[in-house]
Image (cartoon, rainbow, N blue to C red; front, side, top):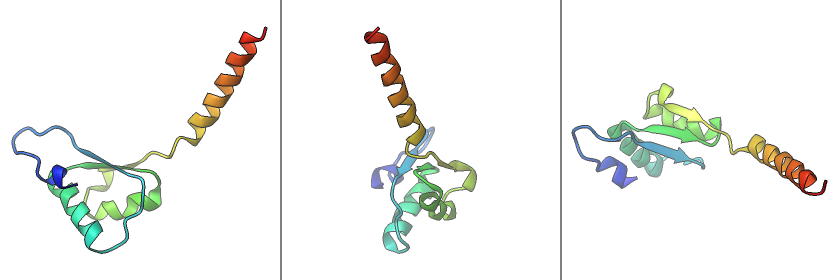
Length: 89
């Protein structure tokens, strides 16, 4: 997180923070949140519960939720079954 806050001036690249876990209120969340705010970063969270605290530091439109791929896993298994069926024909 310190690397995000230390980013240089000028035209900086887009910065994003991928948050898998909830960081409880306190110094840790404040330090991380301030680093995100100063870096003008976006947040990608694993669920709404994890995303909500970051909206105090980052504009809500830059906080997105992308769930942990439950659908993709199901689709992958189905694709693997179809591929196996084609091999055994």
